[in-house]
Length: 324
Image (cartoon, rainbow, N blue to C red; front, side, top):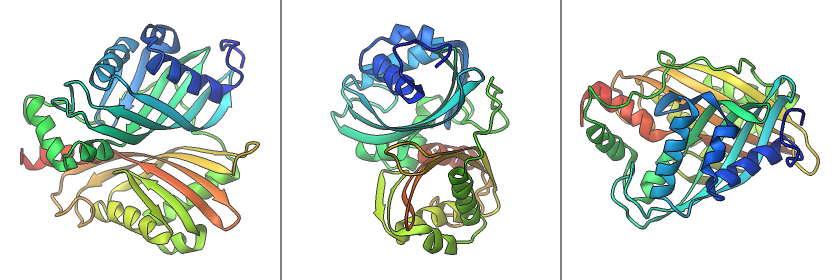
């Protein structure tokens, strides 16, 4: 761990440790040390620069959810300390909506949802980040539908012309990390599976997924076996059948006491021109930023976690149709 604080035994320990220290330990000021001054943070709903913005957003979130926990389920990573390392950190978060904020008036609702955060770190600081929260799961637990929440958010942000624009390739910002992961066979295998699905080869689900596969998908959806896999990926791709699919980052790993596993960061960029998860086609130009983790076993892909932000997809659709 050259260049990193000696209290961290390895990179996963660093990622999980600083997350707990910042959020649950309330050491928010350490973001001045753990996040680079000019960090680029991309979320489906926005893109920003600078650790001061991260500090402000962290305080706002804790004011709205003061008992929030971030339980690190896994860190799938690549790179070396001397050139920099990229972590794909999967988190289960719990929180109670006790304060007013971006989700509206406090509801007292108890929440449980996943996050996948890809972070590039070097010399004890994160300088590039891609963060996806399962917003669909969050708002549903508060009593909203994602489309309804997106419309309300547009209104609260000042309307169609003033609201914050979601992340797209047109407003993305180049950060210091230029890597694409590693060439481990498990990352390659998962990339091939997802690429085949996006090319409408749904037969790969029964040939390459364990029949007893366990799935955790955007919207807080938990499933078993092949049918939930097909419904999730088919519904997404059917909404954007002609959109360009890209895998931006790919990691495979084999670690002691862990199954072979992989992490992908991917996107869809194109028109909402098909019937699927997002209803009647509108022709809206849509960018979907996604992140997926997979674990493999003797009978194929045995666990899959895939997130994207449904509310941001709906926001893009509503910004096109004007139906707010």
